[in-house]
Image (cartoon, rainbow, N blue to C red; front, side, top):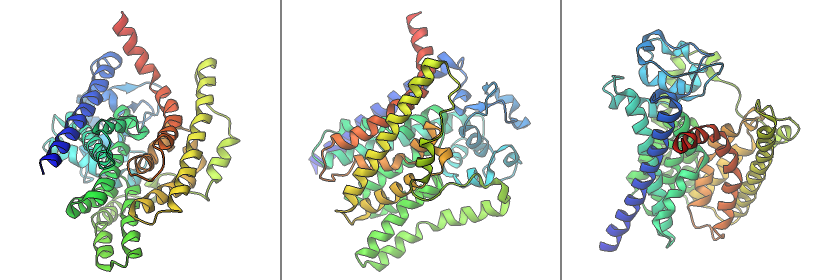
Length: 388
């Protein structure tokens, strides 16, 4: 028991360091690149109108830009139950409102969308960084490795992108790490909590539920399969509520196509980077390097799922299927496909699959530079300020 408590404390300490590093990065970019305006993290673009009720928030606006998804989750956090009409300011309300958990927690912690909502939203995001790093560190401890490996959570693309633009993929990636840890080490109630939360963070979280159910069915544990399946009921009830308050036009673009069709089309679609020539060339090169990382990820997944038949292998297979069936428009943006399937990277990295660790690290390492390049202008601003 003493050794277990010490292991837990060590994992907590490294997870706290991950949280501090994440916050430090946000603090630097906000104060250097956004003039101290924390709403810059929501990446609000000038192409979409801001609700007039939020004019007093002095939201940082990116000119000549469509912004990014975080701006819409920000509005949802102000109006989680369709009471203020903010849905009309969201590009795809039926799609966005399904991803309620992070905006709702921010709304709840700020006392119903009060003056501290921005701090609450950023705090929720950072809390998931802590949880994801802790769970990942615990998984590595189970493999006899140092809990400092939990810091690798900060290198998962969806986590970096969520810290940069306040999207929900980092929190879902954290829950994927929690799914792994609690599947391997329990307790069962904590696993159920993860399964309830995951599809409420993002609908693709239901793949974790499906994996748990499939594994239980394969083991002929019928009651457990029903119990795992029941964890999706809160999400289904919320989806029905959203459905009744939105129109089909708010559902967003189609997500899936036949396996590898989107990736095949991407190969023959030229890059549309609006950047200086040398940076565009670098971005295009790193795009191909990232695609090589995707192919390595798929190859490793195939190797694993042909040998394993448990819940973790089922989750790995389901997220790999999601990856290979994405439509071409996801492949055109490095931020899109990398954050969408970030749970796959954690599922590949954390469990002991009997493979050398260098292979999943290499797969992620091939993909990561393209994501980091996207952050280059912020890093450049920070460096310029530090060197005067």
